[in-house]
Length: 92
Image (cartoon, rainbow, N blue to C red; front, side):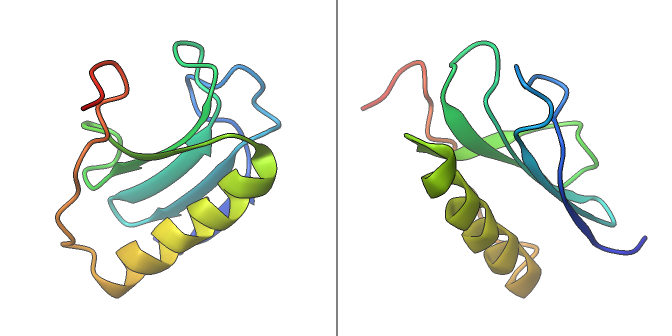
């Protein structure tokens, strides 16, 4: 599957036109404003959307776009990178 980078909505985004998505093979890096948190966040799935890890949140779209690009580059460099969920509902 060819890599794609687009501005499109994830399944849980409130406004599907305001999202960033990268897909290659089984890897998906998706940055959206989900209904539940109402905050820009980047989620990564290594198994074609079966399991998601939320890796970062942002205060604005201006911060979300470079954050998304940072995660795309990191995952392209190391697709087996160990990810930690930021646990948005129970922060430390």
